[in-house]
Length: 138
DNA sequence: GCCAACGTTGGC
DNA sequence: GCCAACGTTGGC
Image (cartoon, rainbow, N blue to C red; front, side, top):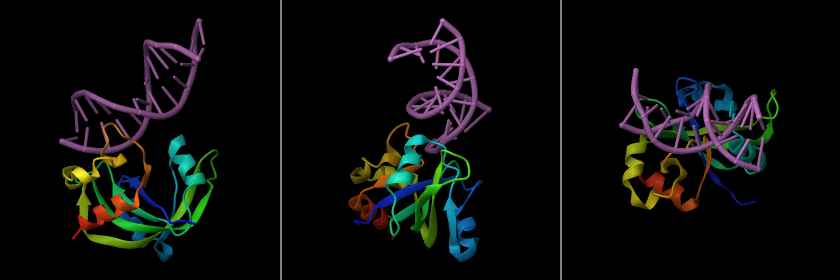
């Protein structure tokens, strides 16, 4: 299977990258997603080995703060009809990528994250976008 | 705290 | 199925 790239949002007040870093084996279920489009992505499209940006939303400096790997594909939460995946922290960025910086890059204008009014908490990233974003952290 | 944008709910 | 009302998200 082709490897895919994603971005997951979380409010650091609820679940931060440091919470994930403190989890056993730095692994935790990515649960609590209550949106059908995001649910379908979790259930149908996210595979083991996929790479995921960890994004902090609704905070002082909204930013991509780390990189995770999917270690368990979509499975049902205890509360139907919601689904989750398991993620493992690969890297906490020493230099996070703020939303404000991402918005300045015209090559990233198509990112769902920066599209007006977007509220998706689980979104796809193209390989090209992934690598453009990684350059921003240098 | 404000508010725009979006998703969901529920009456009809 | 329509759509107004309401609740939530999330940047600023």
